[in-house]
Amino acid sequence: MTKLIIHGRATSSNVQAVMWTAEELGLDCERLDVGGAFGGTDTADYLSMNPMGLVPTLQDGDTTLFESCAIVRYLGARYGDERFWPRDPAARALLDQWAEWGKGTFARAVVYDVFWTLVRIRKVDRDLDALAAGIANASKLAKMLDQRLGKGPYLAGENLTFADIILGHVLYRYYSLDFERVDTPNLDAYYDTLTNRPAYAEHVMVDYSSLKVE
Ligand SMILES: N[C@@H](CCC(=O)N[C@@H](CS)C(=O)NCC(=O)O)C(=O)O
Image 1 (cartoon, helix red, strand yellow):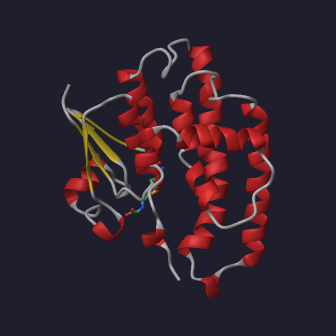
Image 2 (spheres, rainbow, N blue to C red):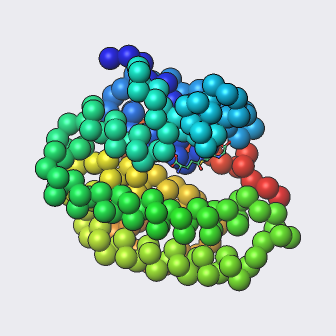
């Protein structure tokens, strides 16, 4: 197997999902600091790999991919075992619907409506009504997830799957931001389980204070 190259700064939550996956699957990989203050995403070379000029981008031999969730699914399908990437289409789809919900609905609420306001926008410029609405929405979704998780410990029960990565990487943002969270005992236990995985602690729980705008 060739060494994977992952282009993207460590503070990007989308890069974190890919790094977490690579580590869980025991893949040999090198991450290159690209994007944000590092730049490097607007060169012709980079844009030929990722026309959006965003991170992450994966190179695996002759295969070059952008879009973090597509990369996680590719790595799962190519290198994951039956537990991480169930081969049965229905079993996989039942997990994937929560992965998709995690990325498209929950992460959108947490990252765009809450994280972005509290971290990426100057205090004086914040729209507090929009922030309150964002927190209310994220809280409603967190309750929904709490119910789905039940006793877990993972989405599929006993084993970590690709879906936990797509859903779970945003939880570091959700739990580390300074706002009042609703009561979600199952989700709290799930997050606790994830934080006890060395790959999550190393690649997802990355200090993002360098992104903070005062
Ligand atoms: N849907 C894309 C979104 C990629 C994206 O928005 N990446 C952000 C970082 S999380 C980015 O590249 N921001 C500009 C930069 O870091 O230079 C994915 O999941 O890969």
